[in-house]
Length: 221
Image 1: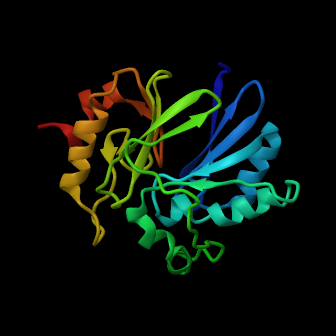
Image 2: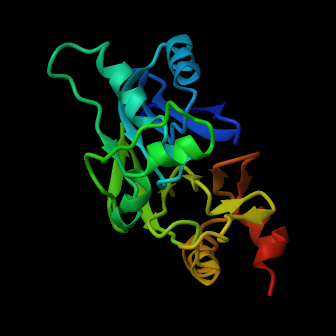
């Protein structure tokens, strides 16, 4: 099994960590959470010589999903007729956010944001296979109702979106937010993972499960 390579492209005024994952041997790639600044994402794809095969979304917020439709359109233009680049995730409970991405964009001055309907909703128990690397899907609500995370336990790697950060957790001060559900998801689904499992989060530097279990102030007590 070839090595899985990772690069982070910060996008939008929110400095969201759009993540590129690719197979080191074939350069086949996936893009996770393209929130905007699509030309910047395309430039990174071009520079790395990647062939993008799918787009994955952790949740329906503007800064994570607002550029997905435009990115797919730009990538499809490079493929032969009949080519496909599926958008997969999040859980369908974030549908109301994805259909309102254009309205969200207008509210934040991001006129290029476009609403999108994924080709496949993902639920807990699903898995994404990326060139032999299996990412388990866990539903971790609280920040949004349909937030999911991607866990590659054998390789000790995860993509956690806006659930868990270095020294912090996702915001829950939205009308649909649920602090208790978020804490429960972190404690029951993420903290049991191995200490050395490293993760990329939606904003800022990544961390490990062990480091957050020991020192994250939101998880004490």
